[in-house]
Amino acid sequence: MKPVVVLHASQLVTLAGPKRPRIGGEMSDLAVIRDGGMLVRDGKIDIAGPSKEIEKKARDAEIIDAGGRVVLPGFVDAHTHLIFGGNRLDDFERRAHGETYEQIAAAGGGIWSTVEKTRASSDADLFAQAKRRAHWFLKCGTTTVEAKSGYGLTVENELKILRVMRRLNQETPLEVVSTFLGAHAIPRGLRESDYIDLVIKEMLPRVASERLAEFCDVFCERGYFDIEQSRRILTVAKKLGFELRAHVDQLTNSGGAKLAAQLGAITADHLEKTDQEGIAALKSANVQPVLLPGSVYALGSTFYPRAREMIDAGLAVVLATDFNPGSSPSVSMPMMLSLACTHMKMSPAEAIAASTINAAYSLNRGDKIGSLEPGKLANFSIFDCEDYRELGYWFGFSQAHSVYVHGECVRSGGL
Ligand SMILES: [Zn+2]
Image (cartoon, rainbow, N blue to C red; front, side):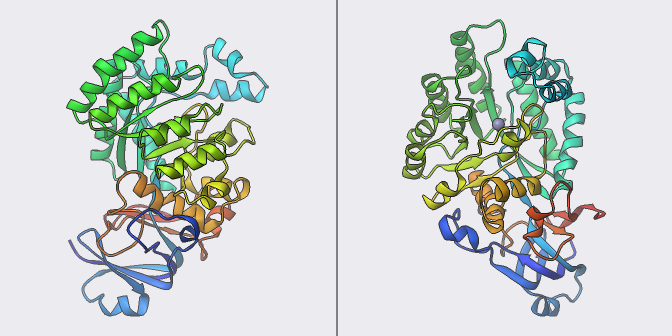
């Protein structure tokens, strides 16, 4: 493979720094190189530095002229529900008319309608729908996503979803990291205790033996899985070798953050209702908070998580889309940057650290992606702007000019 040289980035946003997630003031240091460039060999970054220096090493390399645009590591989206059948357009319209969640569910909408459509989709159909969405992510500058199962809720359907993820990872340029979320909801017609037994005794061992997921997640919330049920499922998952993530404190402050800390989870996600005590618990176990402003926005709420307090407490905050058909139908990380700066009072630099390097560490990939440093994969995007702050400032459209995975262009065209 011919070496590749990137030249003349107005800002090469490297995020070079310590080999661990960024906390406190470190989140504001993006290690920007003005008129920056990179030399890429065999899909990995060899050197990053001022264009003048990189140019000298260009010789037989293929040259990519960034033309005074911003270059950023590919976004790492650490929380998505990427694989599902259909959409929830009817729910969207009903919400616009002021109907409540209960009314929508009674009219045949809600999560159950997605479970039915996902079960009814063949492997090929589910893959085709997911592939289209994978390209949406790439279009917005995201090169790695975490994806959760959870719309199957039977052994075969959960496995079907996880196999679609594996195929997506193999057959598209988007890197997909799999999470098993069998404990997403109690399926209709089953008793809670019977379903939890099914998750623990059949699903988890099958997913583990087929190596279909690295992480296990639980929706810990009133009406879904309570603290003790969540603890039971996650404890078994940990024994089987899964790393843990958990949906906690989204609608009620039920002590989910504390549970994540007690179990040594890598992340605690949502946290809209987490209080000071929960934040302290997360810090005591270095759990990374994954904040999901897209779902707050799309549900029409104003109850955003306390990002400022979390950063001030020294937590390595992560931002993600929570892409799903019900509460966050957006793949756009730039949109999340906008929401984080506008509604959560994160600075533009903090929001970028949270959606690249910190997100990479939350997926156990901090040594490979999330920053533009020698030895890391050449996953990066060129954006049609001169200043990284423009990414969250102009909102509602993608400014991605071109996107590269392992040094190869996977998306181009610009505005
Ligand atoms: Zn979620």
